[in-house]
Image (cartoon, rainbow, N blue to C red; front, side, top):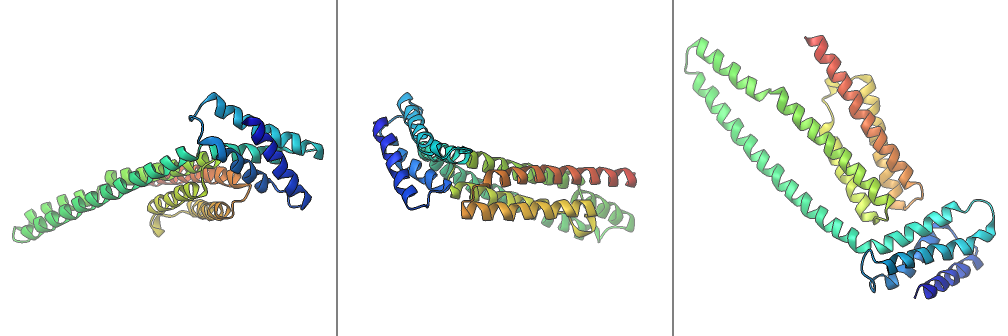
Length: 266
């Protein structure tokens, strides 16, 4: 079976080479198609399946090594194609699970919003009741209600949560791109990251110049990553890595500015 795949890959590459259109992306697709034809016959993680992958990569190495010089991209493309074929079912399961998680996340946010709305109504009614009290009582009630409304701890927790979720989504995008994830999977993680990044965006009056520059950098990297994924560009892993680093740097800068402002206010 492995010999058949090896010969098929060699033949397909040779055919494409004759047309002068052999590119790394084409090699990736050739290997992916060849491995996909037999992957269903073996148990995931089996020795036979690993052998198929090694033979597929070996076929590419033997075919392109006559070029001389650097053939790293061709070999990398063959590995990516083989991994994507082997892990296709797992990635489909991941996408399905991720969809279910997102649905649960949406339900959780809806319930949290309902709680907040209920709290706001109760606090408003308390303040209305306070208007009938003495001036001092009204002042005390308003102060207490405003303290609850303006809780910095709640705001900080929400910001931290959004930051973590954004970084987790970008990490997942990196892992999916590195280990043969489908385009839809990577794109889905980037969309999640964009949603969470939007929730961490501070108010205009709170944005220092250095933070504003980091915000712009992250937004540009998100857009660049999305475009690269859509076009299936070869440098997607590098773009995603830069996005991960830019996001981490952005949150670090914002935290530093926040600490400085808190110190000054004290």
